Amino acid sequence: MFNALVVNEDDAGKTSAAVTQMSVDQLPEGDVTVAVEYSTVNYKDGLCIGPGGGLVRNYPHVPGIDFAGTVEASDDPRYKAGDKVVLTGWRVGEAHWGGYAQKARIKADWLVPLPAGVDTRQAMAVGTAGFTAMLSVMALEDHGIKDGPVLVTGAAGGVGSVATAILAHLGHQVAGVTGRPETAEYLKSLGASQIVAREEINETVKRPLEGETWGGCVDAVGGAMLARVLGQMQYGASVAAVGLAGGAGLPATVIPFLLRGVNLLGIDSVMQPYDNRLRAWERIARDLPMDKLEAMVRPATLSDLPALGADILNGQVQGRVVVDVNA
Image (cartoon, rainbow, N blue to C red; front, side, top):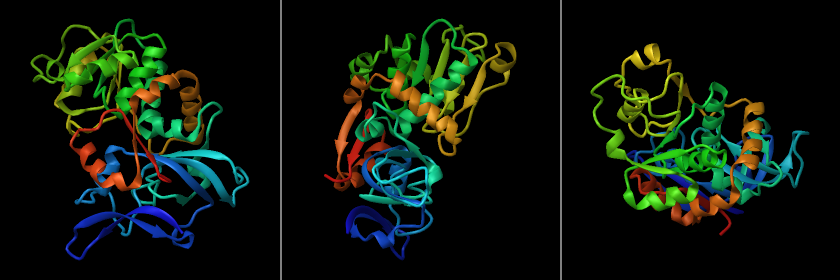
């Protein structure tokens, strides 16, 4: 038997989450059984745990969109018992049971071996958010980061925190956007050289083009903020867009793309090809200063998750929440 956070739905459509004991034979089908050690809390997890249950279609359900742990059993020759692995994406924790349990069974194709120098706790201090941040940095590099500061919106959140640390470590000036002045020192500790108030960026767009300010941008917010940023990019600069917290709409014009050659790069961490996932994790091991991770981490246990799910939906979570599923 093992412990898992299980979400159930009653006859009225209301969901509730509680830590429950389960058996291995209750796990869904898959090639590899993993003894899960750590998971994280992401925005999608909040939606899965919350009373609306917006991303979940079948109950009972085990949320947790990522996890790291040790292979316990495998029907796939690529993995053997004792291998350390990490999983992000593939709708785990949404359509398939995820990481908020002490055991998981999944398809071998969804896994990536942990690179040397990264342990399972560090892997989840990075997690899906940090993996997405690295994909964003890689996309900016592929299109050429211009001279001048790189803007990171939602900088105190999971994606923003890791993106800030990576970009600073690579030698870029980083301007972190935050709506909470109390996070300024935290962002500076990650390497941000400039703190920008959210209100300064999130004003109504009055002109489609403004001064050429930013040499690149990782946007973890979207909506009106993304529209404003597009008009402030340097000629030929790129924006890696990953977030929908500000909404899926984009109240912008084509002018930044036509007259300034701005590139809008959509980053999706869910169904990345294996080679790209492996490359991203190897870059994380090389280019993310692991000493910065501890400043981002907030520890949690399975029993903490219902409250934390609400906190992340309300924008009250700073950095990375690492869930020790065995605590």
